[in-house]
Figure (cartoon, one colour):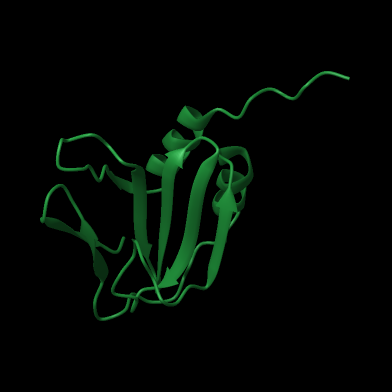
Length: 121
């Protein structure tokens, strides 16, 4: 029996980008990247994925009313594990066809103390 091919993280990231995810790269005071974080606000939800390493990935679907997308108090779905485990689960989530909420997006922390508004698509 042969080992399965390793999961192609780059292909997974390209698929997320094609679905409208926008990425930020939180860094420490020295500028070293701590993680790769993808966020997509759509309908009445926000989908978030955080890659600390290929074997340390967390993803969640949050209600669009959740103010802290990186440290949410409420989630509708979440998963943690390796990239090979989490990416397929995230990509299998159904699209949210509910109308946009009045907020129409969310704030995503950026480099330093800056934040970026991510409008719902």
